[in-house]
Length: 302
Image: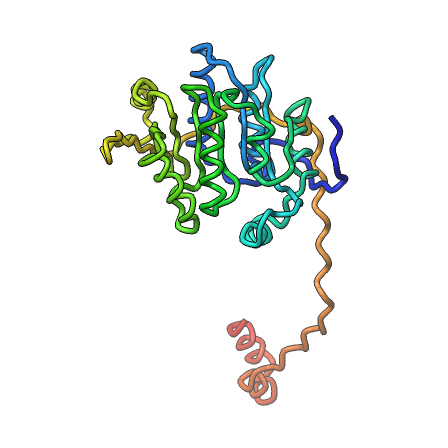
């Protein structure tokens, strides 16, 4: 599939070269949830709503199996549906273009995913109900949009599918927090676990997934685990303790020599430093003392 624009940046050589917010703990969790589905024989498509420059999309695509479709949706450089969303996009994502996303993605994968360029409200009309096993919601942070994205995720997921809600507790995203916990309290969403940035949940039975997850975490020494009960839900909280990211293959450009950094400009010319005038003691010694004593004093003062 050809790219749609010629605007590019320097191609990434490894996943960490792709700009974006995808902490190591969430990489471990994405890998675990997706692998568990595959081992259990769960079939379904993958969906990411809000993809930025592609970091989490590139990672998730490694779990795409034959017969499944991976769909990503983002405004990219397109028009936002309302003034509030337009202001948010201009402030936080002004450098994002579809061309940059495609270049980053194709550095790691042979083919692009199915791309929906537009607001997240187009997703329910383009993705079939009950067709997805994993949905990552990371688009607008405005309550009205997140509320709609969560409602769409419920319709699109298979019964035990997994939804991941980004920025559910960041100080600058209260709209996401309200929409996420509203879904838990009133919308039937069962939280599985919380990372620093994301809420993982299901509209199916969360308990067997939680039990398997906690058993996995207890085998590790690089993740802190704690549990609480709130509003009838068991809340599993996870925090990285020096976790290492899962192994991820390098980009196709990894063996290409890096372009040399442009040479820095030479420093501006400066006037030569004027010769230092001899001190008053040196002048007196030179004028009044015999040469032998003058040389001795000069040597002692140097």
